[in-house]
Image 1: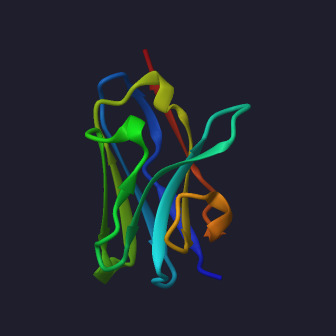
Image 2: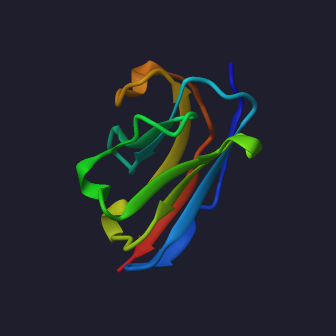
Length: 118
């Protein structure tokens, strides 16, 4: 399995920005970001191929979040702007197949907490 390590979470005020990073031990087909708030299911946020194509976003983050990758660093980023309190969650990086379903991602990081205060 691919080893994934997230970083970049923290506490930010509403309207602020954060950039998450995920370093992978190897480049697999598809890389995704998911998030899980307390008491809720793990939800898809965004995903990208290492080639840079097949980018997907959940509707609620379109126009605010941007996923990108740096192949030389084996790193995938999630730039989050105009953050809202409802974006508060643990954010997970995952590697797997072209999908929005958590079940199709076989490798997961430990997660990084993002807290947006109102």
